[in-house]
Length: 464
Image (cartoon, rainbow, N blue to C red; front, side, top):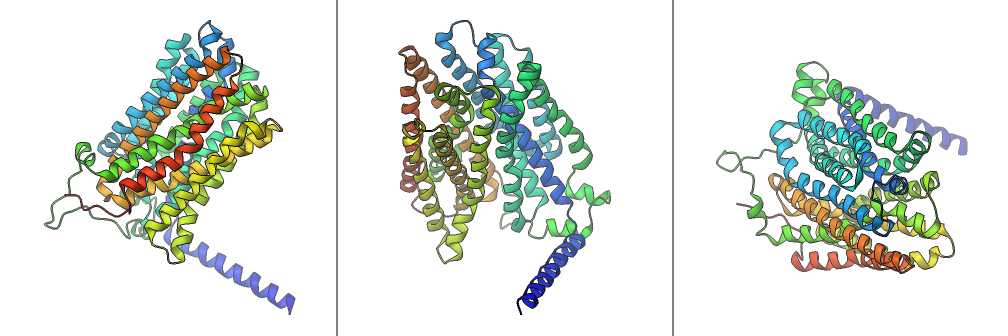
């Protein structure tokens, strides 16, 4: 009987697999090639972004941060801020630019811009030149997100869009995992300049594949690159953005959006919580160096472990509210409860220095838990925009929130630089890290409370 059951289950699995493959063959699956391109671009985006944090000791030794070691932390903070200023401006501007010039040209222009800027770091001299290079990197890097979301919206029906977007954006974690493995190795064997040149050049290689493989579904259908069945599948639930009288709906201005408390709820949610991710991204290698003496390739595995954990958080973050809704909970309550749960986990950061004094891996795992909670929180806070606003306003509201998050990142970077310089001069930089960790631990609960007070229930606005 047992053998019969095993045989039956194997046959059933085979039938299901064949049905799935036949379905893909019937519909076509070129859209997943497009998804892979976006995933690769997002991976490159985070790979280029993180190089500077991994090379901080080498850049200090090379004099890039000036000649006074007493101000290295503040100079590094200013260089981080330069990137964030460019990123904040790019978030507000590039979404509308990409809408105007189209996805193919817009995405390619953004990636070309940040690839050349990444390479340009190798030729920067001193803090001023490096700061200019960071601004030049930050502006086009911000274009990745509106371009990625726009691409998945064009190539996937609504029922597949969340999965496609999740796969594409997971490149952020993969890029953050690859960077500590690849960058220190290049710096040790070839010099720090080549770490910027090689990682930047990867983006130029991506442009070749984008040029060959990407176009709109309409163009690809006309060229015979996709089947009619896949084209119909992509447009199976196409949303029409027209008013009741048949006229086109106009985009809502930023000034109009700022009159809604829902916009401010998203604004403050991003302002308070995005800085935690910025801090992990740019200061984690420095923390491991200061606390545990790690440098170069020694940083690779601890940092890769942190970002591997955050990948789990990204997936779990989207699964939990669905779990609640599948069991009868309304969407608003499911979203709020999930975000509250995610807001609790960063409190573990309060113990990172104490437990880390016993074993470094306790600190690494705790930071990984906090990073995972952030990714879970982030998956849901972006979804609140579509919960509260119609499709024609989502990009603009997302840009406003993204700008707020970058401003928050600037504030925490400047604060960290000043604190670390001050306490390093006093002989105990650990106190500075302790203060920043307290801010990171409490940020999510404060943000959750403000969002709840401003918008007790997430529901769609009827914009004029």
